Image 1 (spheres, rainbow, N blue to C red):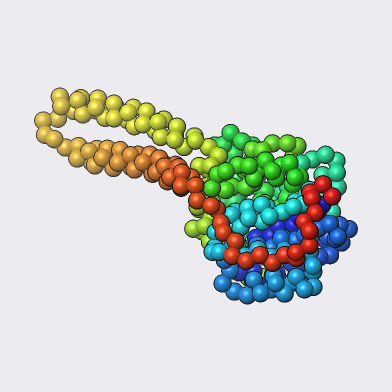
Image 2: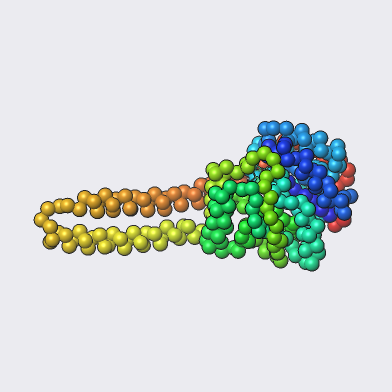
Length: 315
Ligand code: UDP
Ligand code: MG
């Protein structure tokens, strides 16, 4: 097997038919040594039926159905673990990432790169809010993390077998795959493209999902927020020192006891700082707890692949 394509799909029945059609066209040059792995991430619509139906027209399609919705990154991981190709191409089901870039990415990999990632030069058809938050997120993440995670990239990329194996060897449950690939190292290069609007259906990343994705990325790739708590405590020490001087001084200056405003301010300031640092520690502690449980990331409920002998990755 030379080429594996991995696509996580959650309630994507509207874009699946054109996705399969375009992927089938794109794998033409390698069609007898390619597989298209469609991972159904606990969809509640007809996604799984469509995947099974697609297998009749495009024999390279392999369907995996997870036992429940596990989220984009885990669904992608499930597909990557099943992939047998020497090169693995991953993209979203909604055709925001043009499959037609595969040819260019393959050429760049021929030149010796292990990871060719798509860099979004422009996002079309997305809300201003999404564009602004995404822009800020990648910059903030890079400022905090020690790993250089390429800006404005998604999981849309072509990776070599050894880069993929490096990532699959990482046991963590909180998966931020684009960061894990960056951490794995090897030679990486970006390919700019214009991110198209969603082909059909609506986004599966509401604000809540975006926030938890961002916290996973931050906590997974940086412990700086924890150190930030210590620094913050120095700041608050300084403020309380100034306040002590003020309180002490006012003992001599005023006969009455005004200053309730400064008391209220001080109390709310310090309780704010305490809650913030507690919250930051809680985020890490919670993740530590989830990691410590060592639960499997996902279970396969169904697998639709032909029963021919499995070719080895060398072919
Ligand atoms: N997805 C998934 N499980 C989820 C959420 C999303 O498998 O719980 C898939 C989805 O089907 C799509 C990809 O992840 O193929 C990216 O999702 P989406 O396009 O909704 O995100 P956006 O492009 O809006 O950031
Ligand atoms: Mg999308």
